[in-house]
Figure 1: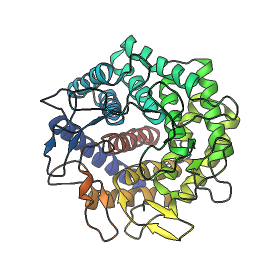
Figure 2: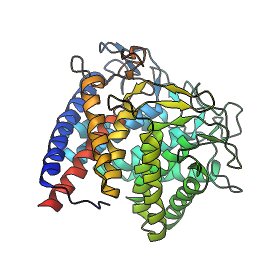
Figure 3: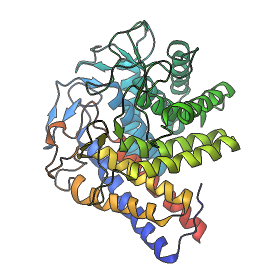
Figure 4: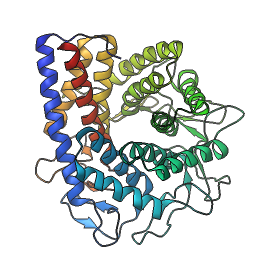
Length: 412
């Protein structure tokens, strides 16, 4: 991946970056080990506020539990810490026992505190995260049942969600996989049949599954997803991602998501590297840099990355969300590795500096959801919730650590 040979000065900076993110990774893991297990109902708490008060009555999301499973599986692979393996085992058991729909297949969107199905909608995004997590868990456990569950979910998506006429994947279904009117992932989303976000995380999931199961059919599907992005989802006029589309891939909204732009830039490249198609890899490398340039238009003067921009109203949503900063750390580091342009490395380092000062909660642990335009903490979302998870920030730390160590080996 890397086209750079860092100078001694830059190598020293990257070494500090790796040390700081290693320390922060441990802080994140310690927080989730301490505060997220549900000691009353089993599994993990559905909500914890900024003061670390657990709401034991909160609904539990399959996405949150899958992200916990992925995070602690990946962390165990990196660190060998047995506590991480225990957390991964706990998450796997809860997903297997509480979220799987044994009648119709797939995972429920939410269950209640007592582990009874609550929202039974089949959101394809949630199925993707289950595949992603189960695949990573298999690397730590070599549990054949986990691998089989991941493969079963993959085959289910191909049977139920794949658009055999125009390609890509439909967004959501009723519990029994019949058509549903409300396809939205969240209240802020457009009600459209295809979304960038779901396609990105199916790609992420399939790439992880392919790393443990080199099936030719799966490889073909990863290539198809990459073509979806290159041909339909990356806007050739702006370089940004198109967030919402109809079944024919027609653009249905012009909202710009800087965090998704920079997240996609490195996830697309990871997928292209996995399938080892030289022409596709070259095209994806170019696309990754186009996306990084587009995302950089959302940089704030303090080094952070803004949330969204609405071109139709020229309105910048100047919130600084935790996950956007995490993805920016990795995505711009990746752009530097690809291009050799030091400005991308500086962006990654500056985002981390902002994150240390303004997003990491040095008093109560974990990361705040974000900061508003006036700099105040976005406190209403808390530290644990349906969307607030350890996946973006732990993954960012792990990616910087691994990339820095690889560069250090090259330098030596």
